[in-house]
Image (cartoon, rainbow, N blue to C red; front, side, top):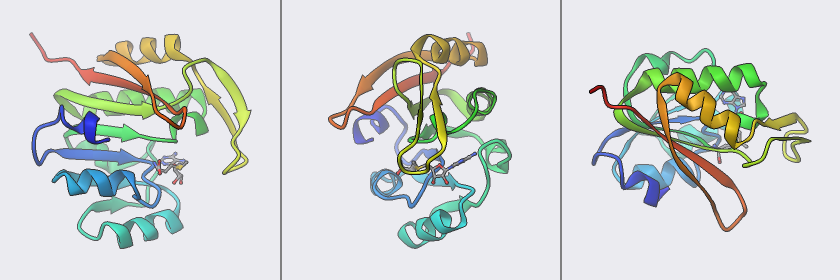
Length: 167
Ligand SMILES: C[S@@+](CC[C@H](N)C(=O)[O-])C[C@H]1O[C@@H](n2cnc3c(N)ncnc32)[C@H](O)[C@@H]1O
């Protein structure tokens, strides 16, 4: 998170989609001076988030419906979320992020690199990663330039993209 956020303007605004409790991701970004806007439809998660980050803006809403996307952000993250949702919802979130980012803004989300389906061990929900080829196509169609991907020490895979700057 710290490495990714170095490419964002100091004190910029970041949208945390599916924020959970906010620890350690949003708390780390807030410590770097970013203004955090967070959404999660689970009331217990949002309550914990508000305790952990009392100064952040937080809404108990789904990513598909949230009004926070009416604002503009320098960065957006969706960690541990995309693959919990059906493909249509994943596509919708990518489109909403593309519309909500300032030109040059960055989007980071986690999902396995290869297309696959499984039962999520935490939620028991059927989960699906669309795979790098499909994610890159969806990002490009929404106006986001895929920048690359990385795998962390816990074998979580991340896709990064940037909102294109109008020429
Ligand atoms: C695995 S947790 C990840 C939490 C946090 N991003 C992290 O990495 O610590 C997934 C979160 O996504 C939230 N979530 C599920 N469906 C969602 C949706 N449609 N829109 C936004 N968040 C959603 C869940 O409530 C949960 O808090």
